[in-house]
Image 1 (cartoon, rainbow, N blue to C red):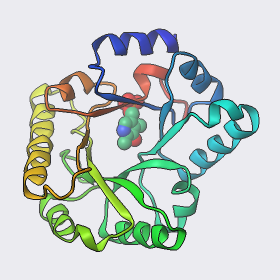
Image 2 (image 1 turned 30 degrees about the horizontal axis):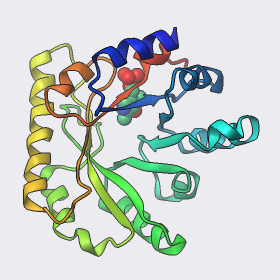
Image 3 (image 1 turned 45 degrees about the horizontal axis):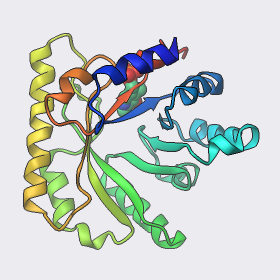
Image 4 (image 1 turned 90 degrees about the horizontal axis):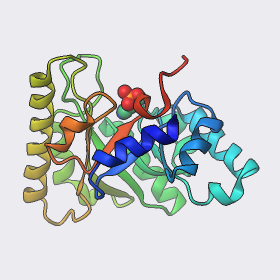
Length: 225
Ligand SMILES: *Cc1c(COP(=O)(O)O)cnc(C)c1O
C-alpha cells in the first residue's frame, strides 16, 4: 500500500520537486516500507519522536540510517534544540525571531551551520504559526548577522479548506513573496526552496513553483493519535 502510494505520487510529481514523506505518528515498519520504495527523506514534527526514530534506525538498521535525511517540520521550542538540530538536515519550521536566534547560537556553539526555511503565516487560521511578510523581510535584511544559519527558503501551510480558490490565493501569495525575496536578496544564493503542498493540496502547489512537498496521509494513511 505504502509503496503503491509512493509510486502513484511519483507519477505526477516532477523529478525536480523533492518529496518529504511525513512519517510523524507512524511506526518504523511503515517507514521501512517507504525506504524499500526508494524514499529516504522523512519529515517529523515532534522533537522526541524524531530523536527516537533516528536512534532506533541506527540501532536496528545502521546501513539504512546512514542514508536517511530528516526534516523537522513542527513547532520547535528553544529548550528542545538538542533533540532536533544534530539530526535534521533541514529545519523547515523556523517561525519566530527568538527561535532563529537560539538556533544560530546553537550553531555557533557546535561549529555547525543549520539549514532552515522560514515558516510563513499564509493560512486564514489564527492558530497557525509563522512570520508575516514584514517580519520575514526584517530578518532577511539582517541575514548576514546569523552566521550559523543558512537561509534555504520558505515553508507554508495553506488554509485548511475545501475552497480551491482560497488555497490558490495562499500559495500564490507565498510564491510571489518567495520570488520577491530572491530578487531583493540575490546574495542569499541558497534561498531556493519553496516548501508548499500536503496530501490534499500538493498538486495545486505545483502550479505555484513548489520545490518541496510534505506528504503524510497520502503515503502512510491516517495517523493514529
Ligand atoms: C503533518 C504535516 C504535513 C503532512 O500532512 P498530510 O496532510 O498528512 O499530508 C505537512 N506539513 C506539516 C507542517 C505537517 O505538520
